[in-house]
Length: 320
Image (tube, rainbow, N blue to C red; front, top):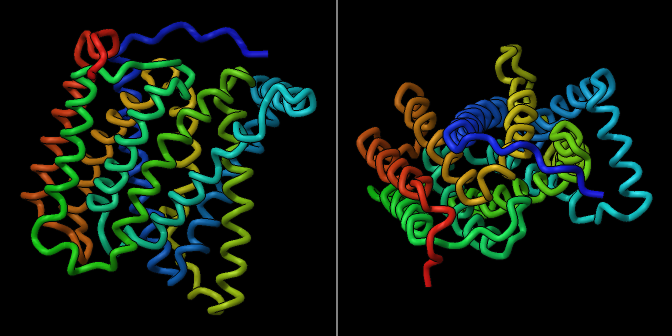
């Protein structure tokens, strides 16, 4: 049984929440990327990030009444087959995203990682909204939303100027795009699962169970093939990726019903790009495109968010 829809948040509040999700995503990318660099093993770094988040979620789900109720609904839904298997698969996309952070961000920087995610997220968000996959139902591809998405893609093109393609392996640029496609699907899937279990906490827990399982297996195989990673660093901040991931996945599951998949994605993009610009300005990576290029990316992508969120963007005439 689907739980009653939550009261609609004001558009400004929902969009601000989406921007905060983006800020947290960029911070997590930098932390996980640096942990992967220090360990010399991005798979182990990703498993640590997801595993620590899972431990936190298990504790919260056990001590909070909403968590216990949500887990009860989850068990009942699985037993009665009212929660299909694909609603439990959001952790696959989360695992891939975190693994990509651990493998690539320390080399390409948060900005290049983010604009790759932008491309995948924008295309996937438009398709999923139009198909009605998200919990908000069918959201028309209106002209403002289409323009907002196109501006986000233009920002991606700007990021690739200055010989970036010659500086890094091609797969480091492709993986963030695939991660972006997965993130949009994950947000929509988590939103629908959140409707069934009536709490974002349980939806987030399901993500971390699946993601941690996949990443621990991948890390074990990688260690068996290449050997154990370097000594574990002692700085506590390098292990905050899991806590940050719990926070923004929880927020995404709660917000997507109020925003639709594309608008949540564009708000996230704005937060990611601004934070990525700040991080790369003070802590540049080897393949950083430079602060002027990154600033231009932020302006273009930000304009896309403003246009897509403009009054009438969700209820106007669909683009043909």
